[in-house]
Image (tube, rainbow, N blue to C red; front, side):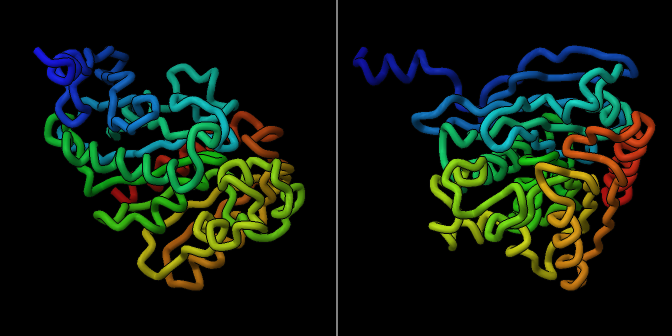
Length: 290
């Protein structure tokens, strides 16, 4: 056997054909498959997702969840600090409501520059479509849902995906514009999370910064959006959410904007009951559009 033949023999199966891992069962018949490889990127770690599957008759509508973390860090199974102590957790709750949920990894800014993370989300959609019958999901009824940096990527995916049109997008306090100053963000600063995402200060990469700005990608073909933002957000000003909603509305796209008085980034400062209402409204939006 040649070294090449041996390498092919011992390599892990390609994600397109790899067996699915054993599922873990939760209350109400919800099942979770964790650490499912969906993409094999040359020179990078394998990209994985967690799947939460309902017991309802298949195929189930799908939520593609995109985590936050300033594009620099974060975990695919984290919907933000205010949901970490929930029992059951937010993804189990979505699955119990009849939705399949795919929580996806993507390459962080220390691993690859934009558009790598957006390409990874497209790869996840491709894999989910390929394995849809096996998983019991309906990729034609997919809503992308992201928080913070994940909200930014969710917006871009919904606005630029050239495959089957997504059914909707839920955006929690996501940056919408990487091209102009919105304190504390300065596009000339090469050390911001946005600059690390792009591989340089946005002001020095104007075309790339525009391509990475959801506000610059709005067209009349966009799916419906739910945009939720804290009015006291000190990291990503509420103007990002308002301006994105205004641009979508001007393009004739159905959009619902909910601003939360007194809430900072990550819903810091909002009452527990308010965070639950935001989650419930987001779930209602997904149900309405799938």
